[in-house]
Image (cartoon, rainbow, N blue to C red; front, side, top):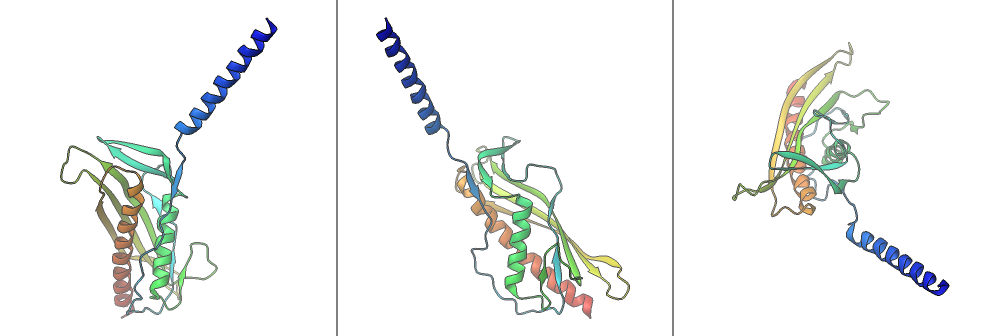
Length: 213
């Protein structure tokens, strides 16, 4: 009887360990994605004699910042096993900061939100739309991402300290994906944010140059 009990408990332990191993196999690893400036940044041929502060971009609609959002059949769902390495708002801000800095456009530098320097101009931004869409009903363009960002360029008067907005604009990019695979989402976002930030930079240069005339 004692021998049978030992065999029974051994079988139970074996089944338990087998179930644990199966659970570990069935549960995929969480993958994290970044927005990095992998494409070369063209050095601007236009320069402006000023400094630009970039404040952290914000969401217009409250959401889980580190979750990748996918819209399927009109329903928005955050992915669990595919996430941003940090908040998407922070990634967008850092991407624009790095790209503007590498362009060497602003002679007095590009400044972070937390700076002891007093900037000549400040860039504020909001993420209006950021979602990957999977919709098999549209056969021509079933998979894509859309990114929409709004900005305000604020001028600070060095004499009076007064501030006023000299540019407000929205930028939107739609980038097609090959399939519904979640891996392609961050690649499409990189393409979108690169196009938006370059358009944004040219508009800011033009507006500052006009402001200084």
